[in-house]
Amino acid sequence: DQQVKQNSPSLSVQEGRISILNCDYTNSMFDYFLWYKKYPAEGPTFLISISSIKDKNEDGRFTVFLNKSAKHLSLHIVPSQPGDSAVYFCAARGRTSGSRLTFGEGTQLTVNP
Amino acid sequence: DAGITQSPRHKVTETGTPVTLRCHQTENHRYMYWYRQDPGHGLRLIHYSYGVKDTDKGEVSDGYSVSRSKTEDFLLTLESATSSQTSVYFCAISLAQNTDTQYFGPGTRLTVL
Image (cartoon, one colour):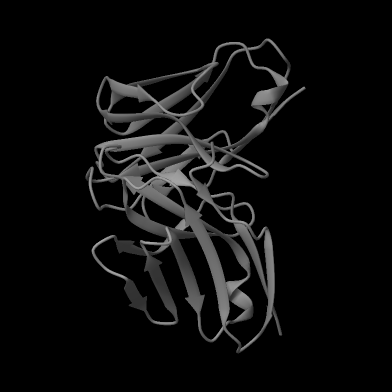
């Protein structure tokens, strides 16, 4: 039972354009969401997070949007840069799950020069 | 970058042999986690620890055991490795239980022949 799903295994965009990565979840107990970026042969690195009491959080070129009614979140990268090419994982934490995170399958983003 | 190291970084072993992976942190964080990453599954939690000698199972704990005798070290043991345990293993740490992000080590690539 995949509680966090990233339905697009890959996404390709042109440099300078917007990248939109999507994530859906099924567990209504999730109240904190995170995005991680992963380069090959490295561990995931934290990118941005959002609490369920908000619907938007912004950090530089990265913005995460949360639609609780649709159980959907998205990561927007504007403008996209070739160095953003990586696998992006969304993750969620529940009110009763302590510090445990549930991850999606990941989306490979490729930004073409 | 969080001070997290994993050893070994690469290992090839044979079915039926015991394997121990080590995670070492210099951050004095209370919480430590072991994940495995497989194509199509993202990152899945194996075991986690919320303090010295305090551990609990994650979603894919069968065939794995852990130990934490010191704050800085978290060991993952495969008592009798199987080919299905071929994966990339990541250790992560976090300071607090709620709202805090997890920081990941560089990973260990394990191949079971």
